[in-house]
Length: 196
Ligand code: IMP
Ligand code: MG
Image 1 (spheres, rainbow, N blue to C red):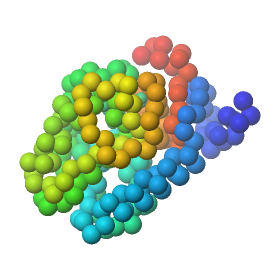
Image 2: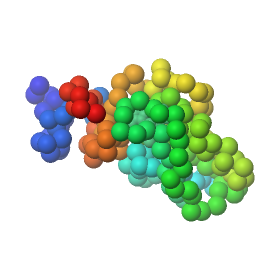
Image 3: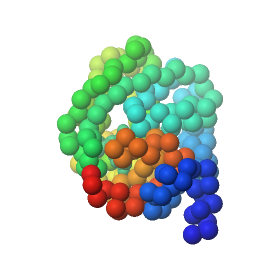
């Protein structure tokens, strides 16, 4: 319990109470993002890189990752929705916000918080869409990968961490709109899901 309390030191009491376990500490996330950023910097040297962040969950990952990439880049945002208030994917994907900028001849790296069933990326036709807008290349970078839950094939090119088949919150990821501001990735206490 002592170690757990320490890891949660920067979090408000109110949110802390709902967390059962810390899976990835703030420090572990930062260290891994530095590695992934270095890898991307090597791979995209001399190329025009554009990060396309999928809102809302991936925005904290984008913010930290882009500062670990040392090649020139631009970024833009899309919003797609596959989840309602539940923790299971509905399979219904709406495009809520499109890109502001052209991707033509740019090397696009799609930034995701977590690839779970893969349906968000597949049913939104985001990758096909970016290719049809003549991006020079389209790849995927996700902070978390839950391969055990995959229902459709999604090519993950860069991944921060593999996670088990568990619903996680924090570091941008939510349950019913909450917990995004936790600086770590963790599991909620089972009773939190009780009402929802
Ligand atoms: P997919 O369409 O099933 O691959 O899910 C992709 C999206 O669902 C992610 O970008 C998240 O927004 C959300 N999601 C999937 N698993 C989790 C989770 O464990 N916690 C929070 N959000 C999740
Ligand atoms: Mg998401």
